[in-house]
Structures are given as C-alpha cells and as structure tokens.
Length: 165
Image (tube, rainbow, N blue to C red; front, side):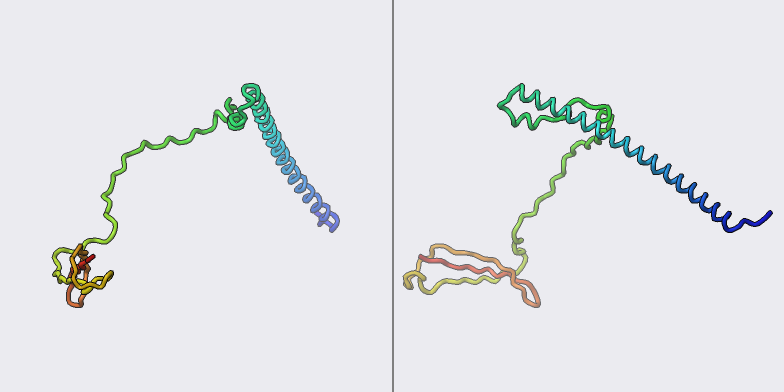
C-alpha cells in the first residue's frame, strides 16, 4: 500500500474538521430550537396573565368606579392553571407546643450575704445644710449595705445616714 502524500493527508484532516464542525453546528441548532420553544411558552404564559389582568381591571371598574384602592389590591390569579395547580404544596407546619417558662432571675445586684460580719457605721450631720443650725431633729435615715473586701476576709458595711430638716 502506498503511503499518502501531503495533499492526501491534508484533505483527510480537512474532511475530519468539516465533519466535527457540522456536528457542533447540529448541536447548536438543536439548542437554539429548544430555547426558542421555551421563549414561546413563556410568551404565551405572559399573554394569558395580561389578558386576565385586563379582565380583572375591567370588571373592577364596572363594579365600583369609586373604589380604586380595592381594584388595585385584587389578586390577578384566581383560576388555577394546570401548571400552577400541579405545583408542589408547601410543607405543613408542626403543631405549636407549649414552651416551658423558665424562672426569670431578678435584675439588679444580688443582696449582700447574711452570714458576713456586719460593721455598723452612723453618719449624722453636725449642722443643718440649709440654715446652719446645730439643734437637729432626725426626719429620716438611709441604710446602705456594701460588700467590703479585705485581704483576709469579706465583711459587710452598714452605713446609716441621718437626715434633718
């Protein structure tokens, strides 16, 4: 068998590339046909929805021309299409269970522990802050309990402040 010449090998390569090009062209044409069909289907759906919307607006105008707010709010789709009617339904929500209420901790600071040693202190003003008189009548007092930290132990300071007129 004689060996192919350069022209014959070039012709074979050209024919192979032409066959590959024709195959890819056929694949592209099929894809274009599928996409065109999809565009036509979507266009038909849009036309159907627009026709329904125009019918709804005409009916709403005839029913009550003064009530434009309700006409704008009325739903466009009230008759299910086969595609819409066959769509999957949303999952059912689980039944509500009663939540167990946890005890709410009171806000603010915790009280000073009772087992600590209490060091009472009393503060009494020497003179009246308003008039400067020294003859004072006690009207009320304020008691403050503070946690005092010392290196060796904790203690509670109870401070009593007397008030006068």
